[in-house]
Image (tube, rainbow, N blue to C red; front, side):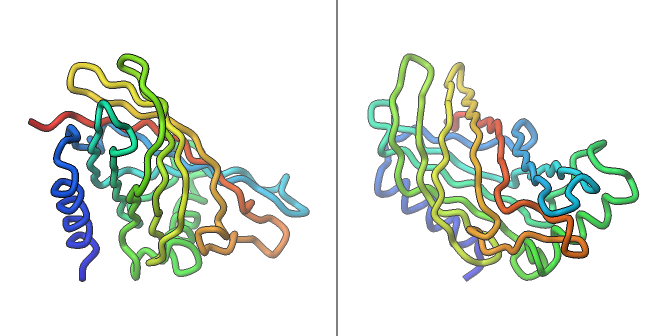
Length: 203
């Protein structure tokens, strides 16, 4: 079954099982997800950190005002849309880094074109228009699902939701062997994701 169809069934199931949450549509153009890949290895001073933009392709949030634990979220990325942040790499290196990132050793974007996060549990608290939440769910990369936890701060005001956060993940934990150059300049296993995700309330 195509992944887009699976996402559709997931969302339908969430709405049928719990019709009370307010529904919000993620706005990819107004959102930002950035990945920082660090250096390691004997000659790491010869390399540089990689700043990667991971533009969202879509998403939906179901937020229950009086019961955060009933809230749900799904997010989707196109693997081949991830790219080097402009100005953070020498221009001649950008195509090499992006080709390696999308290739079979890392994202395998041709075979697994989508990256998907689907939550299965939410905990947290609310103070007025602000929420402090911990979202647990699965991140599907390279066709395999991995459990992750996402801490975030959420503000809701005037039909607009903004979620911000930072988390550390492991390449090996996502089934990716950290790339290296000649075995001496490596990408570190641990990497950082920072994000600001904007969603608008649906009628």
